[in-house]
Length: 226
Length: 88
Figure (cartoon, helix red, strand yellow):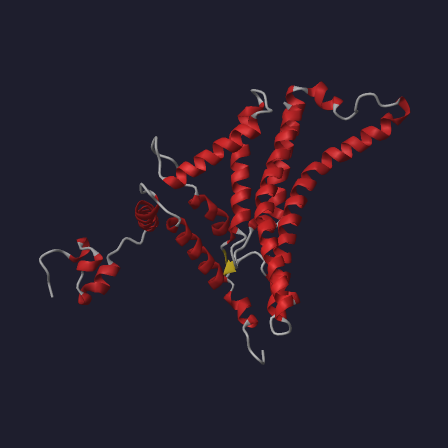
């Protein structure tokens, strides 16, 4: 059981070919491009959802920040769809891999910081020192603020990885426990099954929430810097 | 066995059984041909099940079921050990 528990998180390769690329590209098939004024139901539902989300997310940004609209919307779509597809049985979730989440978090965070430094250098540097600090505390506080700035991309990536991985592991464990308990005591197995159902509902929520949180934080970092 | 229409242009259902190997060999296996085959297959499925006036949940759930099946086949080697057997 120990080896099997983490086997589903290994990068998938079929006959030695890395098909992880195929699996990462799979969600794009589920979002067809709209070609007409009135589209089919699938595209209409997706368009409505994207409009809802983008209005909510871009409301706080000024003109400059809104140029990031495409990036933020595609980010939340990608993370949301990948997480939701990972809840299907036996599927591989790319967002459980720290490498991929770091690859998403670091460039986006670096983009927001560099944008801030290029266009508003004084204000960006001023972020390092909150207003109204007593004079003796200034050096320590600058160091602390620098550390908290550089930890932002790490936190983004590790938060997403840890949440999704932990959820998948819990589902594996509790599902295994339910199966093992059926022969021993049916009532306990039933209770464990209810726990499994609740956990699955939670995982659906977590999948969407994590996507949202990731995107929201990137957008916040953007807001600070534009 | 020779038919008035050349073998290459016939659709699959009209090819006689004896001509089948020749028909398969005459298909376009260049990258462009394979890409064209994937594109035709995709649009065939899309226009039949999704791009219709009252599409239902069946269109997309068939895709998801195929995805689950694909992943099951991919991880069968590890799943073999979890069968219900008295002795593993």
